[in-house]
Each structure stands twice: as structure tokens, then as C-alpha cells.
Image (cartoon, rainbow, N blue to C red):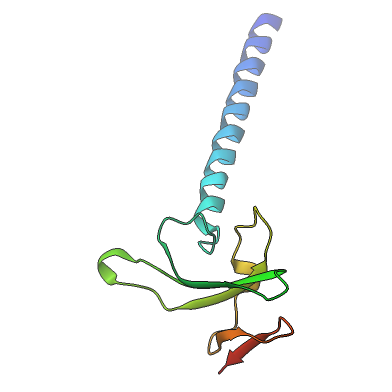
Length: 113
């Protein structure tokens, strides 16, 4: 009788572990789908222009995404720190309705509405 209980318990335990692994992999796929496409590693990213500030601390990008047969997305502007391995563009996106014209002598952005 004890052998049967151990066998059934083992089968239930293995099933629970398999279910947890499956749920975890499914959640990882969902999180990957919701990740920002605003990264320099994005294959559909098309950079229109980029510029480093006069003090070389920041960099801005003007870019859009190639949407295949649909064409291109709207144009985005973003400002990020000018570090070697910084790829995330989402943190510095300029609000829709504004665009970057360039830098002034004090390394501040010149924006236009």
C-alpha cells in the first residue's frame, strides 16, 4: 500500500513540476512579446539621424520602424546617455508632437512643437 502511495505521490509531483515549467516558459514568451521595440538592437529600426551633444554626455536619435508592406511608422525622437553599451531608446522618448532640432552651445536640446 505504501509503495502505491509513493508512486502516485511521485507522479503527482512530477506533473506539478512539468506544469510549473510550462507556465514559466509561456509567461516568458508573453513578456518577450510586450518588450519595447525601441532598442538599437531592433531589426526593423531605421535611424534617420543621430547627434552627440557638444559636451558628449548625451546623444539623440531620430528614427522610425520599417513595418514591411504597410510602410514606415511615425518618426520618433529620443535622448539617451552617450554610453558604450546603452541600447534602450524607450526611456528618453520625446513626447509626441515635439521634435528635436539640435543642440545649443550649452548641450541643451532645441525642440520644436
